[in-house]
Image 1: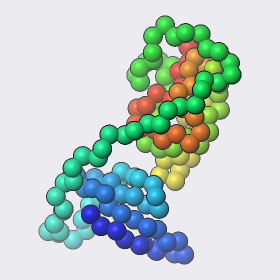
Image 2 (image 1 turned 30 degrees about the vertical axis):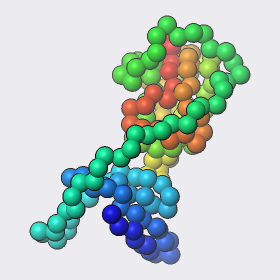
Image 3 (image 1 turned 45 degrees about the vertical axis):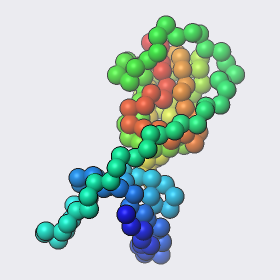
Image 4 (image 1 turned 90 degrees about the vertical axis):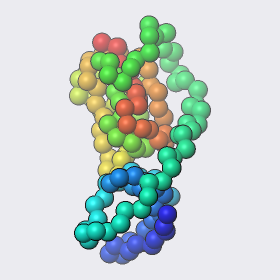
Length: 152
């Protein structure tokens, strides 16, 4: 839809608007895709026609399971199930601090997530044993995606 070079202070950003839908835009900034909200500041400014929906996300295969074997899960954890640590926003996994079999307490940081240039500590919501680790460092995740499962 448009490519721009923006300079803020002494930093330059390559920005490409990939699509606009309502007051949301999908932009590519220095090679990374972001979903952003925007509002025109000039009354009567035309908003471009909505772009077609983005192609489905293709997730690369995950590396082999960690060295410690995990007991077979009774059933997969769903995003709303207690013990499921989920991504609160889209982002990139900076660090996974637990492995299958680790004991965790409520409030222990299990994953560090980078979203919009901010580092977020994602914490255990239940005390127990880590049953599954579904992400690795560098993975891109979506809102609500289950990252770690903890059995109480």
